[in-house]
Length: 224
Image (cartoon, rainbow, N blue to C red):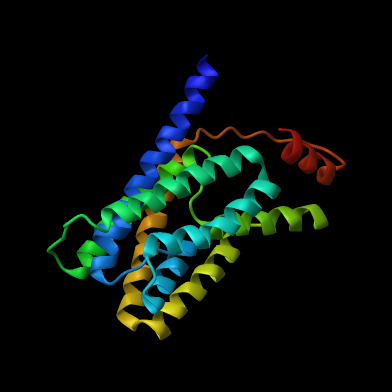
């Protein structure tokens, strides 16, 4: 019973985080000429350049990443990512119609919006979900590289490279102010995510002395 309640709560927190993120993007960031990062940023660029409905673009861009994540990273991860992405997409569609305007400087609005976005994403990540295809893509690449080499790799370079491409596209296809404001969103949101996840997780450290570290790392990853 406790396990079922815990599972239900995790989905509720993922949904709450997705609602926070969609509110930030639709009501604060987009009206102030900024965009989200990752695959959501790609969807926003496509919507701005083509005039297509934003929520439809978000769903279509997210879909292949969710499918790939389910097949490669596991069913539970895929379901949680799907729930978060669906709530985020519906939230975008709803909040786009809400007459909300933050009458402050763009810089302050984007900093505030980035903080709300980061808080929402921190909730989603804390409870095992994901609404950003770039993180799913990075997880898949790391898993494949680790399986081939038996070594650990960081997701950071992959995520930085992915988002650099998004911001460069915004710089050349929209305008430089939008790209710089969006970069500020990324910095603020990442700082908030790091702050919250550091406090969410209790860390225990164990020192293991072994003659076969590669096999031990593999066992920890696969079984623990």
